[in-house]
Amino acid sequence: MDAASRPAVVIDNGTGYTKIGFAGNVEPSFVIPSVVAVNESFLNQSEGRNMGNYIAQYNSGIMADLDFFIGEEAVSKSRASGIYNLSYPIQHSKVTNWDTMEKFWQQCIYNYLSCDPEDHYFLLTESPITSPEDREYMGEIMFETFNVPGMYIALQPVLALSAGCSTPKPQMTGVVVDIGDGATHVVPVVDGYIIGSSIKSFPISGSDITQFVLQLLRERGELIPPEDSFEIAQKVKEMYCYNSSSIIKEYSKYDKKPEKYIKQWTGVKPMTGVPFSFDIGYERFLGPEVFFHPEICVDDFRTPLPDVIDMCVQSAPIDTRRGLYKNVVLSGGSTMFKGLQKRLQMDLKKIVDDRIAESNARLGGDVISHPVEVNVVSHPVQKFAVWFGGSVVASLPEFHESCHTKEDYDEYGASICRTSPIFKGMY
Image (cartoon, rainbow, N blue to C red; front, top):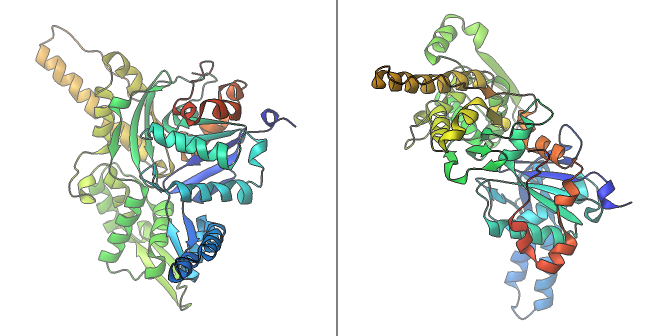
């Protein structure tokens, strides 16, 4: 069977988690922590031997390359044994270790998806801050190591924007607020093209909120097993945290009816088997509040997320701004807090309305600025928006025609991966 007749493999590489699956599905088949556990004891043994023993060193290197694990299994191996070191190949949306990244993809393809890469086209996602050189590295690994017949490298914000549209032909103009586990970017897209000069970063992401929730629990004196503290805080964040319209009102609600709003966590210490419990109180609404008051988490940054979104739009060409305000799309697992869409909508609209009112007052009625529609979009697939957008794109009839092929790579080299064509029929 020809590779073009099989569903393409879609891999969304994230700082915290990587989503993998086949095109045409609504959700990824696997969501795997982007971490690799490597057994470096073989290399340490070879270093202690005579430097002239090249055969022993070579064999040790081979064993080290074969003995590794990824995802949850990597974390478990690292805890159970001291010979496995954890390596995170992606830092702040950028691949920093391509050897480890290759190991990670190897396990994803062969062990998780159980497919032969030579039988499938691939769609891989990239951050808007990815360099052309990194795209070449990606192409080299896919074509040289895995011998894929073809691949397409898609920008994550563009895929997320298409996933957030409910119409058959998506309006590919809008602002993507992508909040992942390791990085947050606000990216303007106009007609399917990213305005690179207007991309804004926000220094707080999902892992920062987890750390902040853990800090609040510890400061209150809650007894949490240290070996599982981060994982517990992460589950508390995902299960109980939400955004409120006013933290003052929330404090009052909790003080008046603590039995209604304060939750309790129960568990068993993994090392001793002793049960433990602790209360979950103010951190339920204080954790996600860092999006709107980042100074409570980051000392040297005081600009709220709605202001960052507004600055992103205002730095874009003036004729695109109304379209950008009209379609602010949420993307990423850390946008799943209840109430986040409503709070962002309220604060962003206030910023825009205040600017218009100030402008009208300054002009004295000679010229009246018309109201600007502000719409923050929350949708059912926003947790996996990038992967879902990739699944849709890789299912289009023109996808295979737009891919970089192995034949092109053999003839022109990795430079072909520096750019990817836009799907005109869709965008």
